[in-house]
Length: 84
Image 1 (spheres, rainbow, N blue to C red):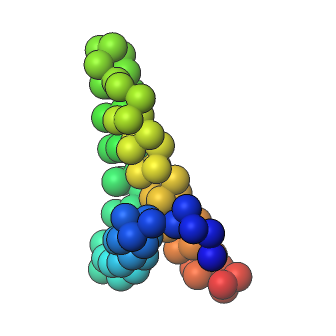
Image 2 (image 1 turned 90 degrees about the vertical axis):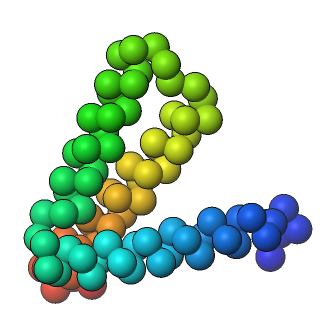
């Protein structure tokens, strides 16, 4: 393991893992929830960008949020088709 991997990295990874698991379970009870969240996040980012108020750090948070939701959505799709 790289010495660049910090305690903060481990905590962020753990939070992402738990969030991923929770979203998968919530999707079972509310199909389409993850896709709705993904669409909402993309819409929020576009809105903030159009106002010229997007800092680099906020943009990175949105990008990571979109990536996480896209991974969850893809994995749910794979489960639905039996590919996982």
